Every structure is written in C-alpha cells, then in structure tokens.
Length: 162
Image: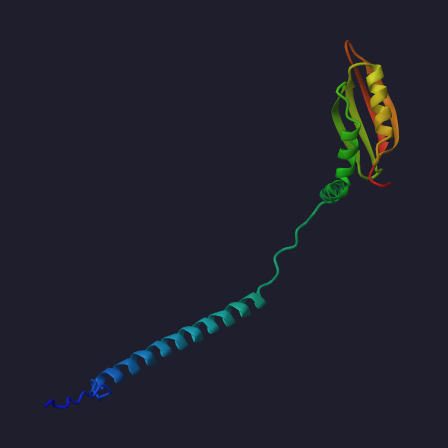
C-alpha cells in the first residue's frame, strides 16, 4: 500500500527577526536624508531670493545722442521691405547691366542704384525695366557718364511704401 505523503507548500518559515528591523532602519535613514536635503535646498533658495531682492539695480547706461541716432537709423534700415526691393531688382535684371551700389534712404523712403551698362541703350532699357517693376515708384535716371566701353549711371526710385 502506498503511504500518503503530506507536503506543506504554504508552511510558515521563521525568518530572521533582525532583517525586518534593519530594512526599516535603512528606509528611515533614507527618508531622513531626503528630508534634510529638501530643507537645506529650500533654505538656500529663500536666502538667494532675499539676496536678489536686496540687490540694487546696476548703473544705467549712458548713451550719447549720436549713438542713439545711429541705433534708430539701423532699426529703420532693418524694418525696410528688402524683399520687395530685391524682387524688383531681380525682375529688371539684364546681362548688359551690372549693379555696383544700392543705397537706401530710410528717412526719405528712396533708394539710389548705381550701375555700369554696356552702352547707353542698355542703361535706358534698365531704367525702363525698373520703372515697370512692382515695389518701385518714380524711377528716374539721375546721372550718367560715358566711359571707354561702358556707361556708368545712377537711378533714383521711391521705395518702402513712402
């Protein structure tokens, strides 16, 4: 006959009595350290904020009227519709004309364009092309000078919506 074997899988096993107490002590130490770190950082932040509030503002910058005028002029130049101007110049481009200088005047809303052309007809054609572009108004030939194999000329135009 077979004898019955009794196996107790859920049996109680007696653990070490000090292991639970040791884990509790380690957890308490970690919590205490985290709390002290938080308290120290909060105190440091309050001190730094108080120091910032007491700090006097720095000395005011002294700016001369000439520097202020230069800054205003730069801001005005940057605010101009450059895309319009470049689109107009590109649409009027000719292989017989080379641009040499583009001088905007933000205060007057004008632009002076200096160029060299292959001949006088090329210069006049370029001025005509510029006068038909969008973005430029009152296009005028303001000067021209005949050189050996070229014509140097300047064109004035209203630009920038003024």
